[in-house]
Image 1 (tube, protein in one colour):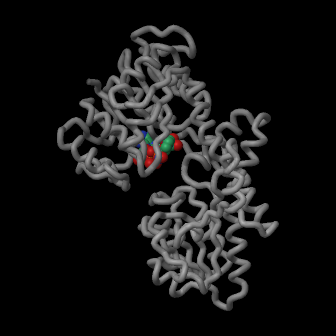
Image 2 (cartoon, protein in one colour; image 1 turned 90 degrees about the vertical axis):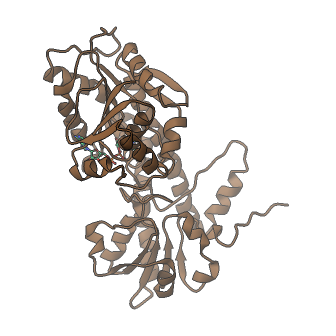
Image 3 (spheres, helix red, strand yellow; image 1 turned 45 degrees about the vertical axis):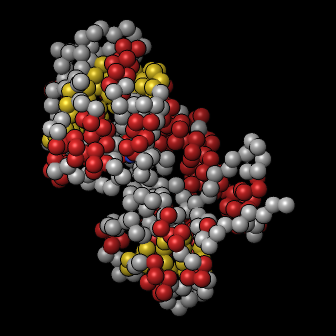
Length: 423
Ligand SMILES: NC(=O)c1ccc[n+]([C@@H]2O[C@H](COP(=O)([O-])OP(=O)(O)OC[C@H]3O[C@@H](n4cnc5c(N)ncnc54)[C@H](O)[C@@H]3O)[C@@H](O)[C@H]2O)c1
């Protein structure tokens, strides 16, 4: 059993910390946010994730997990802090830099520092250089060289969990373990083996960093293709869902679903880290990002065009989270659409059973109200389906048959039974 310090108790750090504690490790969680620390010590997660409260409660009650406002001495450090991009789309590593600086005074010989945050290629080596400057009394490995057992180890072990299935996927997903050296990877592997039932693949940290970015870029490029297809079909007045359904009958074609855009803190962000690292080599990844970033505006324009036919239009927006069945609104395309509507002076009714708190700028807007589905459908002239929450499947076609419907996510085809025709 190891002593582990998890830095950053958010969507990734908190479930990881609770999981490690459930396997017997002694875990200290460090977060800069005092409210999070206090809440976690009560055994409560500060966000909803199935099964997490149970896991966390048990971890806190057994005394194997406690949160605090500073790091501590440990054998392993797992860094899971945000890695957003700056206004110019370059990676913002300031949170990682701060996290690295904060653990430096606590490091001891032979400890292992694992970066779980999604990072641009080279970030693990950058962390090693920063630590070496701060702790000249310790030794650190060089990329690809043989390590000394007393070196502080560094590794990148990216996270792939899906919100809503995190506790299950933490255990069952395959993992990529990328070390500065083979020894570093082996040390990190020892820790992950305590709770990962999926396969662990060992590689170097540069490869691991790129693998994570590539996974999300693959998704982004394929979603962009589907989104572009929806524009083409709109232009040609052809049903995009029928085109995709029939094209996917080809044994080697698998077109993804179009939507209102791509949101969240991963797929909408990570491809830019590759573009930043290889600007001359990424025309496709950049174009895909632009297609997906442009989608909310296309949807908003379609709604506004319909709204212009009404004297005082009211639009019911179904769903404002960044994707279906989550409460998270980070980088949400649906919220971008809402903002566009409001700036065009269109009144908006937000109907989202999962999102309890809207960003302050929207919550206080005079043209915005929240409403349940029945009230929203009762008052709206236009219904926009923006996020496919499972709860919306309970709607009946008759509920919105007299409304103008804008449906970039194809939700209405799933209501009252989808149809597939074949001879
Ligand atoms: N959320 C996901 O589904 C997901 C999936 C895969 C990868 N990731 C990656 O994991 C990383 C973390 O994402 P997240 O969703 O958990 O973020 P988050 O915002 O939910 O949590 C980050 C936490 O770190 C804390 N923090 C910030 N700076 C700190 C510092 N210097 N020291 C200590 N604590 C600090 C914040 O207070 C916050 O509680 C990101 O790189 C993200 O891209 C996230």
